[in-house]
Amino acid sequence: MKIKLIGVLISIMLITTLIVVAQPSKIITKETSTNTPVSTAYSVDVPVWDIGDQWAYRIDNITLTTNQTGNEFYLYLEIADLTLTVTNINDTSYILEFKTSVKGNSIINTNFGDGPINITINLPSLKISGKVTIEKSTLGIKALSANMSGRFWVDIIHQPYINFSIPVIPVYVKANLISDFSLPFSMLSFPLNTNMSWNSTETNITINGEVRSPWFYLFHFVNSIYPFLPPEIEPLLPIVNIKDAFTQVGTGNVFGVPMIPDAFYCLNTEMINVPGGDYEAYNITIMGGAASCFYAPSAGSVVKITGNIQQIIPYVKNINMELLSTTYS
Image (tube, rainbow, N blue to C red; front, side, top):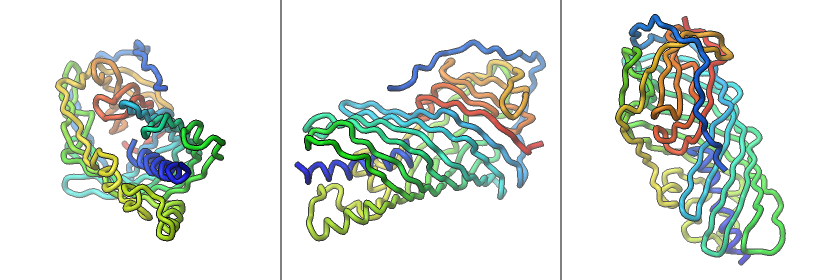
């Protein structure tokens, strides 16, 4: 049973690491806007960005969750300052670089057939830096690459294999992540005007990369002397290939985002207040009011996203993002 438990712990470490690099829920309530409507709506074309243009955002709530039979995963994240800077431009795309830190927590409830396993994870600080490629004509995401490093703490609250408490386990990871979109994904449609609707983008997101941890090297070394790892886990170590790991858990590394007719509707323009200032913004309703996106022409980008967008982006149960500042003019 101890050997089996060790195998389970490694499986959980791999799963939680993948949640970090990839993916009870809060109830989303629809609120009536208190912002002042602006009657002088006009059509706006896609903005033109220049090298050095910068947008800083605060994301004080990202809730990702999945719930399948016998398996529940919940992840809550906060980003105090996500700054995106245009560093390169080509014929079709903008390249933006970013560097930030993320904190949050996670809950995992699962069962490998011997009884329930309940785990909480605390993520005090995960350092992330990388690049995102944006299509000029749509402001849609074409690709994302990121390097991540940090320590999280795993607390196994309940498990069926041993009858004594397991101490909180520190897990340090370093990872690189590469995501490619088969078609650029955007919540916007240009030229943009009020009283217009459009479909969400049907695309496939392919995720690749590697995850490293001192624990993985230790388990791999011990297993070479005294085999104890489950046969489906041992080939993944010591450097976890994200594609192989996703394939091993049965999902594959290609995730489809469906096309949803009339997923977006531009209701009106409003004066909206965010930490970065007051903006005249286009109020874009998502999935009939489950979420809202506010695009401000004078900021050259989105200034706020709030609500439940998991029908558009799988697993994202809730998000609240606001503009802190911009150098765009």
